[in-house]
Image 1: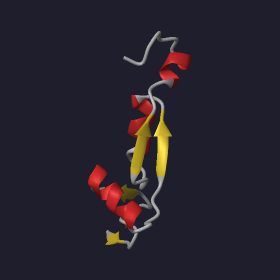
Image 2: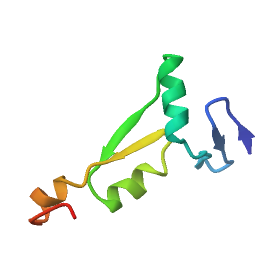
Image 3: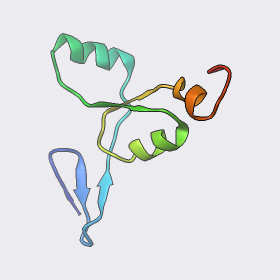
Image 4: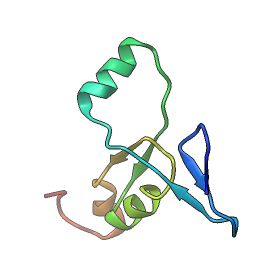
Length: 77
């Protein structure tokens, strides 16, 4: 297994393991001050969030209001 600069480790069979660390709100604020670019993607439910969590995307924005449309809920609570 060889570690790459982007945080990915390649296995002999071609599989990829994503090594992620938790990103905090203070870190995001710091990145903004440094004008650091990062990726963020929106997940509309827990299933999509769990799929995205296995990718090298740094941040996931969970937007549960889509559940009102997709699942017919009366509120997001």
